[in-house]
Amino acid sequence: MAKEITPRDENYSQWYNDIVKKAGLADSSAVRGCMVIKPYGYAIWENMRDQLDKMFKETGHVNAYFPLFVPKSLFEAEEKNAEGFAKECAVVTHYRLKNDPNNPGKLMVDPEAKLEEELIVRPTSEAIIWNTYRDWIQSYRDLPILINQWANVVRWEMRTRPFLRTAEFLWQEGHTAHATKTEAIVEAKMIHDIYAQFAEEYMAMPVIKGAKSENERFAGADDTYTIEALMQDGKALQAGTSHFLGQNFAKAFNVTFSNDKNEYEYVWATSWGVSTRLIGGLIMTHSDDEGLVLPPKLAPIQVVIVPIPKPEDELLSKANEIGNALKAHGIKVKIDTDDTKRPGFKFAEYEMKGVPIRLGLGKRDIENNTIEVARRDTKEKTTISLADVVNHVLKLLDEIQENLFQRAKRYRENHFTAVDDYSEFKVQLETKGGFFFCHWDGTHETEEKIKEETKATIRCIPFDMPSESGVCMYSGKPSERRVVFAKAY
Image (cartoon, rainbow, N blue to C red; front, side, top):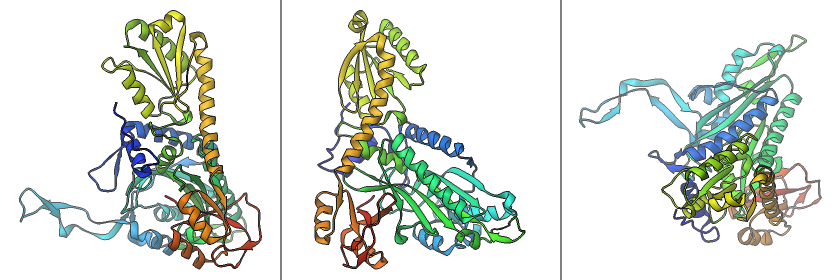
């Protein structure tokens, strides 16, 4: 299998695209800006989805589904939200085609089939959901509503990259309704914690937890909580956001409830989501110049057994025995039965796909009661007793998961920089990259000037960073704390 992966230090963007294609994660589409998620890539998304779905349900959330189309009048109801997404909207204006009389065999939009009201293809579902919640909520007894949906959305991006930014993508979006402000804030922060836990425990991707600046908040939110990860090129990735929406959508859609004193109040709201861009984050956090590297907890194949040189009866019998023993412990195992490819080709293929552990089994191994174990993260090979294979693999999967997390954490720690001088900030931003902890005067004007001059944005105001008096690196005005700046995807 020809690798032909562009080295990271030569062209990081092409390296990323090469892995997406050669690891079989996604393909280009006939629709510009959209991608085809191939089975292997979709299997990674399924593993993410299933784990997150479990975590949501353990905290009392349930799944539902809402329409793909949003009437334009509903979309316009919450002005900040509508304005924030207006430039990315796809709009349906007609509902029928007909034969083109001037071009035989071609179709045209039927001008007589114009919709009475234009429909927005959902870029996010707050509008259609809060219009529905108005009918569902009358009393405090109807609250809270804790709903999540797994869906696709459309945001018409001009510059796209598989998984990271596409015109259509898959995600989950939670939309909850509460009787009090406190309940809604607790909900938004709880989901924020779930996202951070998932990123670190399952993706092995360390994150910074914090709040967005007012300028970077979700359109229509009072507060946005984010998890920010650092990729191997020194750029940040917004990996998940949870929003406290206040009463903005309740007021826009007139969603009220009678409290226990029989007084009417507006409902308090949250929304939150992660998307298939997490797959992009997974690629850029762990992978190398030989291909994809996957943390075992999310790998579609955790262990592959390769009979050497070919899958003959004796080797297959032993491979199946080992495979069944591993599967009994919940391990995802593939036994390679392809007799048309050489072992070296197979090794390269599974390395490219990021399979955490490869077991090589030959006739001599059976005679010696041994088996070769190769781990993808460090490329180390060892020979162990067949009698120890199950315990060894179970332990090794945990070791690989932890090693990937610690390796990513070390990279991030080596790219944490506290900077007080704006000139130094600009130099280090270009030469080193990473997260920069800098004083900021809290003004929209300063934030926009820094973004305009450097393309760096405030990724978050971190929760775990104490207050620290200082002066803004740009304006020289007083600052109460440092915030995190970085270039970002």
